[in-house]
Image 1 (cartoon, rainbow, N blue to C red):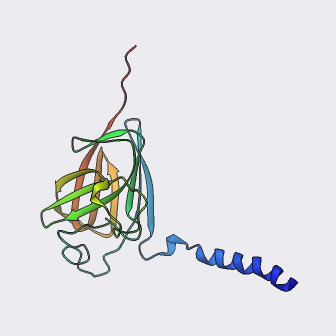
Image 2 (image 1 turned 180 degrees about the horizontal axis):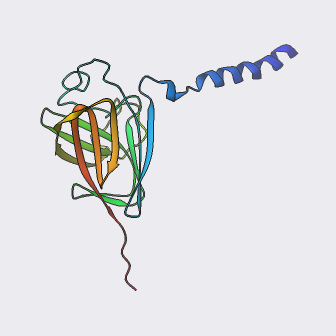
Image 3 (image 1 turned 90 degrees about the vertical axis):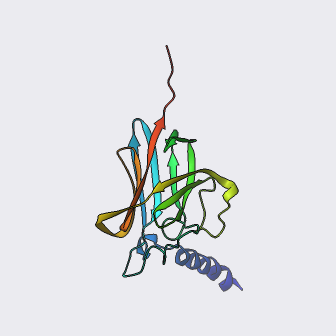
Length: 176
């Protein structure tokens, strides 16, 4: 009987350690970057899938349907201040990023439920903001999906397609 009391904690420890997965070893590894824009902070967390010879748009990334904008968990953005996204207000907070790709334009969605696996439990009633952007073909080919912020723009690039949305922080102005 005493043997079981000694072995049980060891068994639980072994199960716990094996349950922790090294996400960097995934086929679509996680990427996390923090950007600073005029005194505001924006953090992007996403999993970066690779093309690996697959048909991307209209195939792996379906047209006209909700997409998690990456792999594994839904992509996320955390904002330290309110931002204007293509002129529309997105309050400070953490959001999942979903998209609805189409041939020439994409709907970019910021959803209030930040922690989601894929798009399986996506609920449009939790959308904080939707903006439509034009997608463009690029001469530069990206094997791995990229989300980044540069020059006050959230930029997506994968394969030979790219799109961007403007991100202007709305800092509080106090008068003295």
